[in-house]
Length: 447
Ligand code: PEP
Ligand code: MN
Image 1 (cartoon, protein in one colour):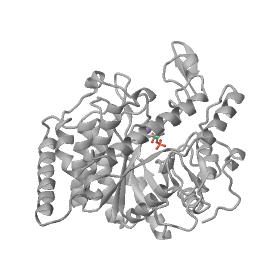
Image 2 (cartoon, helix red, strand yellow; image 1 turned 180 degrees about the horizontal axis):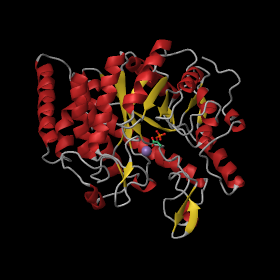
Image 3 (cartoon, rainbow, N blue to C red; image 1 turned 45 degrees about the horizontal axis):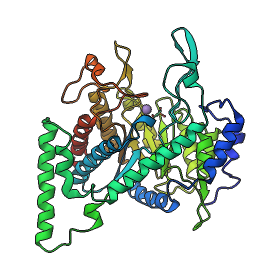
C-alpha cells in the first residue's frame, strides 16, 4: 500500500491540536535533529508481525489486551515498577488465554506514553494561571510556571527512558521470567488472599498439571511458546514532532514506519479528518488505533476509516470505543451496525476507563470498578447481538498497589483513595483490581 502525496513532515501543513508551544525554536530543532539520528526503538518487521496477529483478532481468532499507565512518569522508569506492570499483564493474559482458548495479543501502554491531551491549555494554581501538565515528555507536573514551561529536551529524555523500558521488557519476556510454569510465583509475589486469588491458584495448578502431562507424554516443553512472551508497545501518537523524528523508511519494503512504538493510536481529541494527526498516521504502516467518544459523527468515522485504511486490510485499524457505562447502550449499536454494513474490517476494542471518570467529594479523579466492568459487559452483549466481534479491551492500570479507582473486592471507597493516590493523570486499576477484572472478562470469553 503506497500513500499518495504523503511525507513524514507533510502534517506540518495541517492544523495540529494539543501541541506544546516550545519556548525556544533553536533548542527544539537541535533536539529533533538529534532524535532523528538515534536508532529506531522498534523494528518495522515487528510492527508487521503485530499487524498480522491483529488481522486474526479482526476475524475473531485472537483477543487484544492493551493496557498500562494513563501517562508514564519519568521517575517511575525503574526496574521494580516495570517488573510489576509486566507481571500483572502476564497474569491477565494467562487468565484470558485459558478462558478464551485463543491467542491474547499483549500491547502495553508503555515505553513512550509520555504526552497527554488536556481539556484546557492552562490551569489556576494559587491564583496564578500556569500551563497545564502535558505529559513528562513536554513538561513537569509540578505546579509552578517554571516546571510547566515546555522543554524540548524532554523528548530526548523520553526517548532514552522508552528505550530503557523496552530493553527490560524484552529481557524479562525473553529471559525466562515469562515462562508459563512461573504463573504461580508471579501471583505469590504480589497478591494477598482475595476471592480472585483462589481462582488464580486453581488456574495456576491446572496449567502446571497440563505442562507436567505434556512432559510425561514426551513433549519438549523447553519451547519458546511455553517460556517466552511477546509484549508489543503502544502510545498515543500525540506529540507529532517526536513521532516524525522516529519515523523511518523500512529497508526491506520501502514503506514508512513510526518506529517509536509497534502500534500508535489517535486520541478522541485529535482525530479530525483534516487534522495533522490523521494526516501523519495515514502514511505510516504501523497498526493504528482510533479512540471514539460519545460525540462522534457516524459519517466522519466512516471517512476516517477509509482514510486510515483505504484498502480495508484487517489488522491495520482498531476502533477503541470509550462511551461510559451509561452511554454505550445508545452509542455503540449504530456504530457497529453501520460499519458492519459497509464491510469495514476493523477490530472493536472497549476502553471502559475514559467514559467513566468522575471527581469525588475530595476533588480526586476516580473511576468505579463496577462501572468499568459494566461497560465491558454491555460491550460484549451489544457485539454479540449485532454480530460484530468484541476483539479486545484497552485499560489503564498499574502493577502497584495504588488506590485510585474505587470498588473491587476490597471495596475501596472514595475516602480510601487518599491512602496511595499516585497518578499524575487518570486513575488506574491497581494490580488486584486488574487481576479481578481479568477473571470477570474470562467469564465473558467463556460465555
Ligand atoms: C487516554 O487514553 O489516556 C486518553 C486521553 O484517551 P481519549 O483520547 O480516549 O480521551
Ligand atoms: Mn487516560
